[in-house]
Length: 243
Image (cartoon, rainbow, N blue to C red):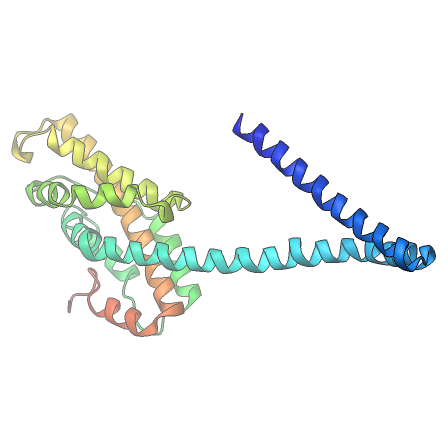
C-alpha cells in the first residue's frame, strides 16, 4: 500500500509540473505570440534532455556512488581495526599455540614496511593454500575467557550496518561466535573426547585462516592509505617475534 500511495503521489506531482509548464508556454503565446519560436525552443530543449539525463543520472550518480563507497570502505576498515585491537590480535596469538606448523606460517607473514600490493596478494594466496596442522593439546580456557569477555563487543559488530556488505569478515565473526558457543557447552580440554577435540580443531582451523586473511586485508588498507599506522601495526604484529 505504501508503494502504491507513493506512486500516486509522484504521478500527481508530475502532472502538476506539466500543467505549470503548459501554462507558462500558453501565457507566453498569449502576450507575445511567436508560436514558431515556442516550438523551436521546445524542440531544442527536448533534444538536450537526454544529455542532461546522462550527465545527472549517470555521471554524477557514478561519482557520488564512488565517493560513498570510499567513505563506507574507510568506516568498515576502521571497525575492523578496532576488532583486531580488541580481540583479533590476541585471538591470533592464542590460536597460534594450537598450530603445529606455526613456523611455516611465520615465514609467510614476516611483514615489513617495504611490502607492496603484490606482497600482500602472494601472502594471502599462500595462507589460503596452507594446510594448517591444528591440534588441541593445551587448555582452551584463555580462548574461552577472551571470547566470553568480548561477546557484547562482537554482537555490536554484527549489528553494525557498515559490515553488512563484507561477507568475508561477517563469516569470520560468525565462525568466532560458533567457537564461543562450542566452548560454552564443553568442559576443560583435558576432559574432552576424541571427537570433541577433532571438532574443535576444525573450528580453530577455520577461524585461524579467516583471522590471518582479514588481518592481511586490513594491513594492506593501512599500507595504502595510512603508512604511519601500517608501520606501527608491523611492529606489534602477532607474528613478529620482537613484539
